[in-house]
Image (tube, rainbow, N blue to C red; front, top):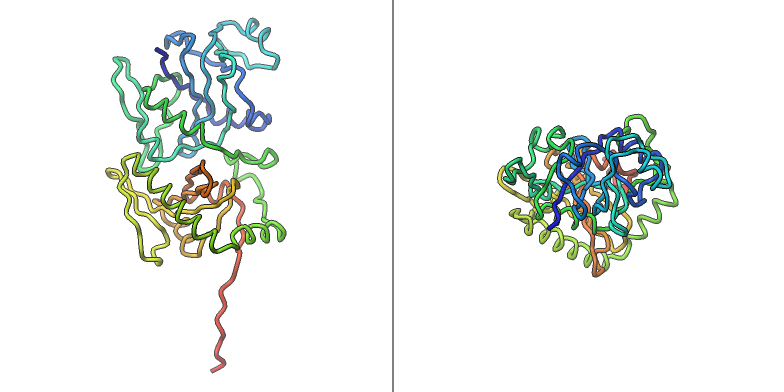
Length: 314
């Protein structure tokens, strides 16, 4: 039976790889250390993980074909430059997935993850505050349960869109100029949501999909009927709760519109979560979840419409 492991890549490593343009390319090798000590063998599954701003990031996965403890030997097998490390994992043919550096696990998924302690006892992840994982607890090589591996595989199977290669990585969002949506793109976005019949069916399908996804993870989901609240679902799991805004699109693009109330929620509500269902009317919808900061860090935004009221001269 295979065993399942994670290896942690630092924010710096992910940033360097992102800037090198390897996003979307399959892993050819995993450099690192501690693989032999952890007992990793051929056929075991390795997941590359990272973290940013308290969020859990899932980079890639491979099934181990070989473990090599020589830089020279590995370099002779790999037709690309590799970093110097004490050990290297090579994948079985066809098992390495594309690597993405901004793929974030939903909080309900993170809560279901279990690491194996030295005696084989499953333990949940440590958290640093209400909505941040303890990054130090993920460093190095860690063994995880089979159910956690299945959760990773489900996330990897979902369609994912990395940031465009010509846009700076969100790890340095304060250093980049925010790109603005131009008039042509704004008109295209407006047109994609112009069919009200499609919008209604998309909203209903997206809402059903999100409710099902949360309930499968053990969350209690309560609909919010007051439009003045600025969110659609109140989701509770133990001491955690989220104010969820549900958005859907029949397309695969990560585009949506927010009302002013929803926008205010995103700015000021620390429990805000936006669940975007792409391909909502297809047979294979995909769910992406973002918090309020993500809307500033990962998206460009521009007002789509204004509300007018006649001003009485009296």
